[in-house]
Image (tube, rainbow, N blue to C red; front, side):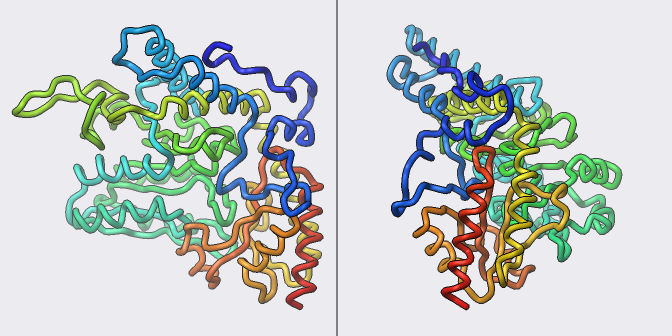
Length: 424
């Protein structure tokens, strides 16, 4: 099989309508038992599973086309280069990018945000400048800005969340001013599932400041149709492994003028044009920001994941997750002591349910569910600011994807009744 020529999805061939029970057959890992029970995988906010077409694309590259990109004259290098750059354009189109040079491959959302922090932030920010973040951010969109603020003298400001897990947007104009240089926020909360009205927020920022807007899209791109141009932001970051792609690959999209103005993030091979003893000049975009040998296989795998997601349909994925979320919240409410966190309106959230269950510790809940073959996440979810707002040290989190079904929800609800019976 030639590079990129992956087998058609069985779901595409067999089902003219969206059917999660059929789609899950495309995911080999889901066809197994854990602790003598059929696996129920509800940890999709941490990472998603990979369809057979993505696994085939990875194997095909390593079996037939493995070579370094851009610098080789031989045929294997040519094929690898074509596949890698085709992946860049393919992934860019998926999020509405019209210029492939604006698509920078990184290791994931974390590295994408760090690239912005260390390349743009250290170069531009000065003492007294302000960076506006929100209380619901993942640590990946907090810690890099804390480090940069310490080095530059910039100040962090915060947009709070209310008791429903929604941003207090009425306060936003008051937090913006002449010294606001950056507004960086998540598109979808990994704890609360809150879907923020990013386009409206960008519009408000433009009305009250000249700040750049960076969006953490790690929990949005896998679940919602996203068009970076329509959102109006300056930069957008996301990860491959949360959207059926491989680990270790992600994207920073940013406007060309912004990327042109930024110095390189790392130095080494590929990102240079000429190296002299006195100094060096940089390669053109996007290579200026991709020092060294890139994750070629990861990019090709991510491109295959994008193909798969588009065959399934992003609108259909979002619709199914809302239906599943509604079903889950209705049935979980029947479990004594269940306390769900996040917006009451399903229309304002994605397929994530963080919850407390009486006095049971989240780690105990997760352990008991695992004994029933159910994978959920327990902890602070790299969002300790949210936990402090909620007054909780940790929560249990179930997160859905398009291959989850109401049967998965029923299994979890039954297991939580077992937890309640153990802890009273």
